[in-house]
Image 1 (spheres, rainbow, N blue to C red):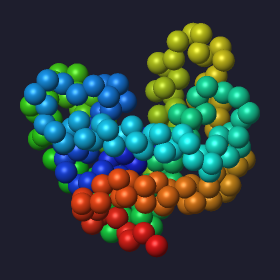
Image 2: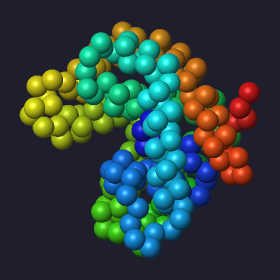
Image 3: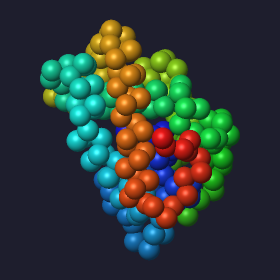
Length: 206
């Protein structure tokens, strides 16, 4: 899962949400004297990733993209953020614009005391409104281009994000249907792992 899903899947506590967002770029390392919620958010991020990687719907979706390709998991992460964004009301009790603006305001304030690298990542992702950008396919394409621009020459020889756009267009309906089967199962797993937390921004799980 990518930025938007990780923030949405957290309990609505800002340090927890930011820990979930920061886990990948900081490689799951909390900094000294950090708030407990940031570390808890990073741990939830790892649980989400483990559940996602092991789920059969995700495996089937990857096969739709290509039999091989080291980047297809990254492609699917961003595409799932796109599906979550365009079908937000199906999963959330809060209007997306209100949820994201409240998160943005609280994230900028909370990150003021974070270490420089963590604050830089939050500024890049949150202040630039990347979470909002996934609703449109042109935002997805820009995300793909940013990743391609950071790839080493060795990786680019094997794979590239932009090359998946045709496959996404070909299999979009199947990929979207697979997401609808997978994402509620992920939500249920997160909720089961944190039974005392409030997820009042989620639609009730059936």
